[in-house]
Image (cartoon, rainbow, N blue to C red; front, side):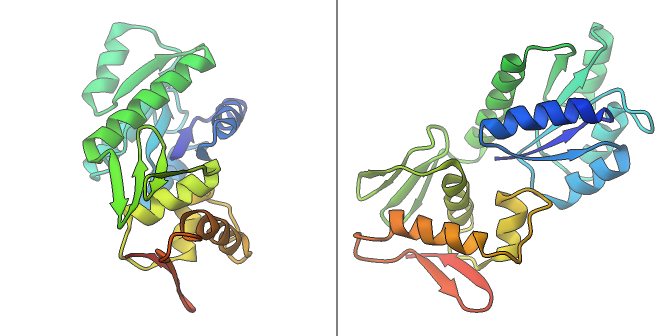
Length: 222
């Protein structure tokens, strides 16, 4: 899952990003409203964590503009303001949840998990391609009813392949969704991870689901 953290205080974004990365989320950060809106409108995020008190444009305005521009990504708002009126304003312009600073990081994680579960349920829980299954709620992967253990990055890569089954996926597309924004797509890291994934979901099963499109990228299909 890929998350965008928006806060003008780099100390705060650094703290949140570090904690989320330790839980295997892919995290981008933005420290001003212009950077925040550009990233939110260009990149496919699963969740946005947005601070209300921004110096150039407050989080309420950012949230309103994102919703106006048809960005439906779940938004968790953070603020030092604890008044009911401020919470209502945030929710009314399109935020999905609200957390008051200072907060316990475990509570932030619980709210992140809840919003991501809600997003998954609204889409679909089980992804299937041929005899390969991936449960987005439990993160369990099986092929021919045999459990497959994946690292967090391998899981994110497979989930992206399955969400885009039968479509050609370029290395740039993979780097933008599965890795962080500053990832160097010209390295061979993606190819290495695809090989590791193939070893786990294709080897020994009789047919290969992940196929290489020479000069372009990959495709997952029966």
